[in-house]
Amino acid sequence: MGRAGLRRSFRLSRRNRREGMCECGRSEQDTGADGHTYEEVAPYSRLPATRQRLVLLVGPRGVGLNELKRRLLTSDPEHFSVTVPYTTRAKRSQETDGVEYTFVSKLQFEADIIIDKFIEYGQYRGNYYGMSLDSVRSALQENKVCLLDVPAHRIKCLRTAEFKPYVIFVKPPPIKRLRQSRRNVKVICSQDEKGSAKHFTEEDFQEMIDSAQLMENRYGHLFEKVIVNDDLAVAFRELNMALKNLETETHWVPKNWAPS
Ligand SMILES: Nc1ncnc2c1ncn2[C@@H]1O[C@H](COP(=O)(O)OP(=O)(O)OP(=O)(O)O)[C@@H](O)[C@H]1O
Image (cartoon, rainbow, N blue to C red; front, side):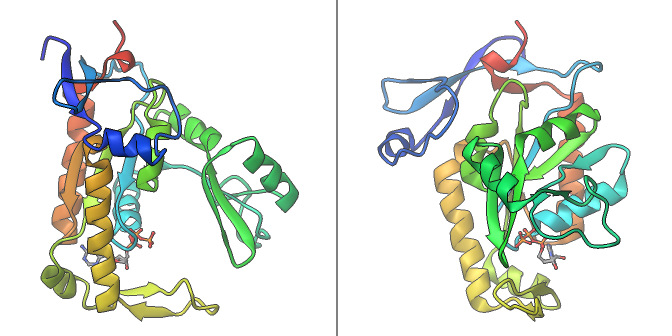
């Protein structure tokens, strides 16, 4: 890899613009004669003294993002880190402020929403939960590899020279394999007030597959690695390998991310 190049990007750029989906950041692309949009790229190898790239994990609900993140953290807690989310729910006695969550008041959280502090936020059982850009910065300052799962539409907000995100899409296998691999799995039912566990249903599997397809159609041009989470051990090995390569090999990144 020795020269700058153009990577085809924004396959759906015209549609994206029509739908007003490019919410943040400066557009770095040029439209080519074929109507596709191209992005100028350059080779990038991280120097030992510089920060790790942010690792974004993207995928449909229930595909296994948290499970893979948890396995990475357990396998090497000195090397990987996760961001600390904010919440307005009351702190439990065994929790420490700034460790599991940063606890803030509802008033503070709502003020922070107004100043656009959160990459994403939502409400659950009357409490707010959200992830801030500052939490990502703090995690990266530890000089660990920060693992963050975000909704696909938020990738663009984080595609900056500061974070240099490496985007991994975790995809479900075909439905036949989902039925087999998840047959003994129970998940917490978010609609259930008691938070009871239930098995995946056929609808859950279909929704996972449809949602993955939509994500690929819309944001596939931003994914640098796709991992099919069929056999968990295999998916984990593949993820680990991709992250090792990320640190040792040269990768193409948007030209303005690479030092000239
Ligand atoms: N390849 C796999 N084989 C079997 N079970 C799996 C596999 N991947 C994940 N699981 C299990 O599926 C369940 C859902 O996984 P997980 O909670 O990681 O999903 P998620 O993508 O983080 O979705 P959500 O945000 O809804 O929690 C967990 O019980 C997890 O252990």
